[in-house]
Length: 176
Image 1: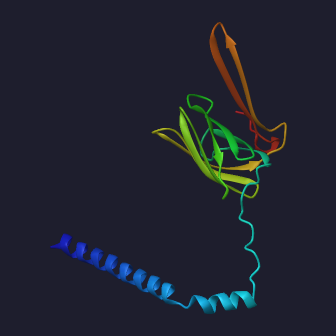
Image 2: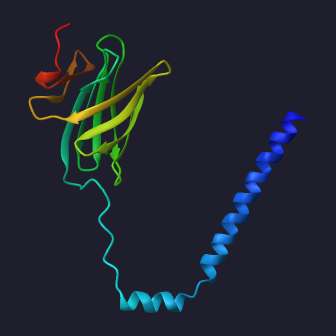
């Protein structure tokens, strides 16, 4: 009995939303386009403000410690391309590559994880998941050199080595 009552309430809500959507759609379609065009011709509206997009010439680096964790995260952006490095200094680390989308949304991925977030002013706010047990939420501020993300690659005896390190601003460093 209880499941049937919940189902009926859900169906009633869906029906109400569908009816309301149909009424709004009918009302919008039935409005007189000629009057709207005459008004627009007399009072031209200004162009819409530019979207908060990331210009293709942006170059920025963000770095921060992850709150309540040993992990650090850094991301470098060049135009719409981005690369990030996340590590905890012990067992978890990942290089992630991807894009910054026009609205400032970030989506990076690699063989060892994924990072999603958004650029908000001079900060990147997001989360990185490096395995099923780890989720690192972060807010990283823009940093200036020598702080930032560094990567070194080399081939030694046929093996490709990749090293990464993050230099945080002096105010956020601590001795451990």
